[in-house]
Length: 294
Image 1 (cartoon, rainbow, N blue to C red):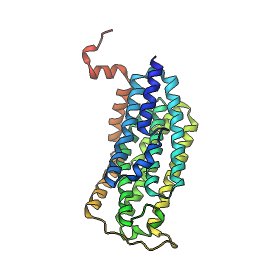
Image 2 (image 1 turned 180 degrees about the horizontal axis):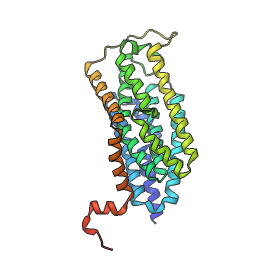
Image 3 (image 1 turned 45 degrees about the vertical axis):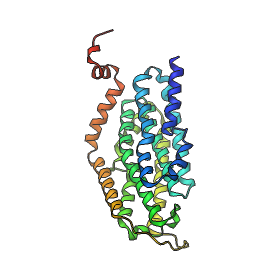
Image 4 (image 1 turned 90 degrees about the vertical axis):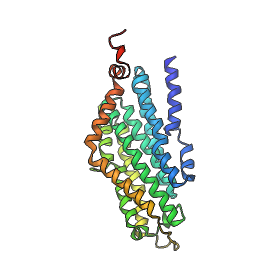
């Protein structure tokens, strides 16, 4: 029946989005080179998340009582697993991979609220996260390139020699944490609002806690970038290529621009949310000739 079909799609897209079914992601992302890891982090899981948004707002919206609470529960589990992952590892590539898992939990929590605010926040956060996670994986990949190590204790004060990376990392942390006025703030506020409207206080609390844990895990890396490990061995840093600095600068500017232009971006995501939550509007835009027909 329709319920069974909707559950099949839920499992399929959840695997694509790394929603609970995330086992493939940390190992896969950890072995990719910088460019591929940044591309996959930006797009791979977001395609699955966007498919979940489209399918479970328009196509299977008649099963809200079953699907959306299930989505919210899966989002909560995903956030918790992601938070455990970012704390458990010293491998900065795996920490970055689990950051992706946490953000997917945030996005699907917004969808699971089944409110306009929550879905709008999910779409905004998805758009923002494409850029922010690209920045995260580009920085992480560059750190591995410079030091030759994947453990953060070998960063040994790198930010003092390459201040651009230190500044970019700080901006990225605040964007991931949703600290105002950075780009992650509007999306998280809307998801918070949707969770409150839906009465999902557990999901709301988990989102706050996992956001703080995500920031802590990144500040831990930042600490070693500035202060190093006093007991660590000497690391010979490679010279960073100019093209990496240029790409890094562009990504930082885009992240800042999304925060500054948040009202404009919200207008676009609000229109997208209205389109995804209104069958009649979607039908009118896709095929206006069907208007008025039974």
